[in-house]
Image 1 (tube, rainbow over the protein chains, first blue to last red):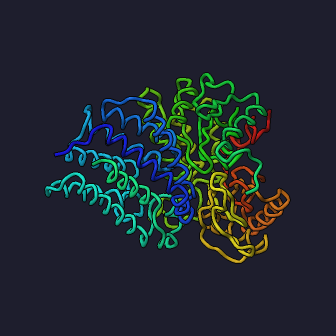
Image 2 (image 1 turned 135 degrees about the vertical axis):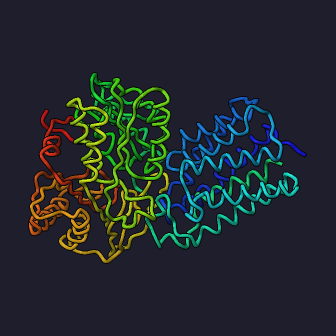
Image 3 (image 1 turned 30 degrees about the vertical axis):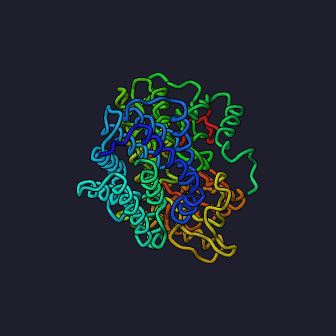
Length: 210
Length: 332
């Protein structure tokens, strides 16, 4: 089975940065409807900082790469997205460990560790209208696909599709976390910006990792 | 967008350059974006720091100095600062008696300060946090991120800062912070929206003939959007939920704080204060102390908020204690 090497993981991060940059205004526009109109701006600032790190530093271990990426996001994004995405990549890296590549099953474990980090930091429940609502189904879909014998590329496509479905499913939800929660009923009918950027994370994985 | 800026991305950094130039008694770390009082760490004193998104000036940087904060960490406009800022500030202001973090209840602020506190504790510094959540406009805290921290934050930084100058311990300051927060309530309203420089367009739309009652300091929607009213009507509309939430009793004494959101003239704020004073008098509530002006703002938003803090002798004495900061200064 194909393994994911460090350069592929870096390509994932670069692709995520590209998708965030392309969708910067869209994410900010979604956030201005139910939040504070800064999600695209903040994520773009953070991922540009990550790309600068990738351009300037050599990595030989997955753990080191994601520790640096996590700390870069924590110190450059701010808001809630900084600690949440930062914790995601920190835990992803700790789980991946001192290795130069991940096989498909180990990648799934790292996705899950990242998800658990987000849960520990933000304490979301399913249906709260947060990034968790895209991240949890994407992670489950990936691991279920690998368990049932799919190849890496196919499993990543299923993760991407599940993240996008999860993103769309946030539209009718009543927000219970973050600034959107202050809207109460008025949050219904709007797509969650955090779930939207998380769908881009898995779209980037499907495009860059196989 | 018409603003007195050079470039949207440079607003906070360039404002800090101006802050440093105007207030040589402060020390600014431009790389990490931290404002320190010049004599930090102050021997024998618990350090008190705060931080939050920019755009609420003078909060928090304007409250750095004797009698209030030892350091403030500004984030990007309306965006929480980051843990590396709070960690560096915590380490620098610690004089060996620990550091208190004053945190407003917003998801991002809570998470970033939490990460910073974990990192500081790992480095052997004693840290406690006090969270402000005084905005009664948020009705159902069970199903939301909870009440937002607004006007009480200013009053807490003043009173807890004064207590820190007296040499009180970290535990005592944390308990005092809880006391201030639990004895304060606020509610705000907006007549106009505001423009985040990096976004370039108004955060929300509000018609010429509309107002938002219960607005948050980042333009978060309030309880009601309704046709705009007179000052007397607005005063009752925002004061009644505040008084009712305590509930305050006839004979209670309060600090009455009428705050401008940034785009409302002091002339109108004093007019509003007059209305608020009349309404408090009619309810038999005494005004022990007052504060009127722009102290916790929302960029150029027009509107105001009212905060009441129930006073006892301890809080009155701490409020009256000397303070020497860019934003509040008396007794020195």
